[in-house]
Length: 257
Image 1 (cartoon, helix red, strand yellow):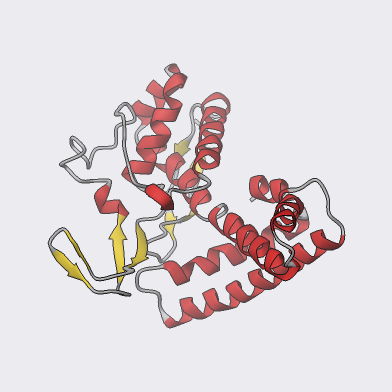
Image 2: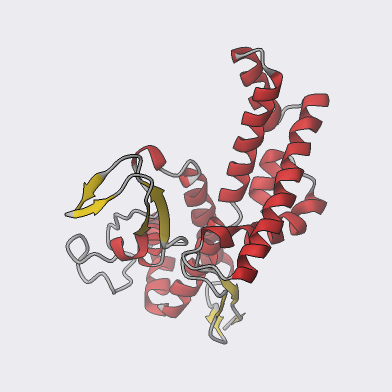
């Protein structure tokens, strides 16, 4: 939250509020959300829309040296329609924000959990810190922060022998693809020394815009953890949010050794 908030130059006092809204909003992207979860998502979405529309108007009134002001200047130079520019920048700012505090925070907490659950690999990584990027990729493969992505077919098509009608929504199981034995030897084994290809950032035109930032955050956190808390141990099983697609640890108790 601090990373994306400081980049967008949002008031730090708003971080807890925005983080809570991001956690609630994601329920709309779950595989089988409950009625109460959808209600939470709808409320959070409305509040986020109002917040970021107002943010765009603030930057329009008082532009600065920040991404939102820069996007406004870019759109204004491309077209004369200020209203259309404001809408485009609002959608971009909201997208960039929503992608950051949910999936990245999930990846970071899962990474810590997995490494502490595999102390021999954690110890090996302390002796071989140059393999931290490999460990990050294996975390992304082994337990992706988002196990499901949804796509809508633009036309009638055939996928792997299965007919899909135009406008039909298809749920793609990223978690299963990352454990495909045709692409990974012993896919159920967590191994930070493997060269882990994965689809956790999607691919093609849908490839995650924030992938480099997420990798940088994970590498930074893991490097600091190895240096500052080398003897960290889990003291209780993690508590998981009631989700299917967006797995999230809500509590992980640890102790220094």
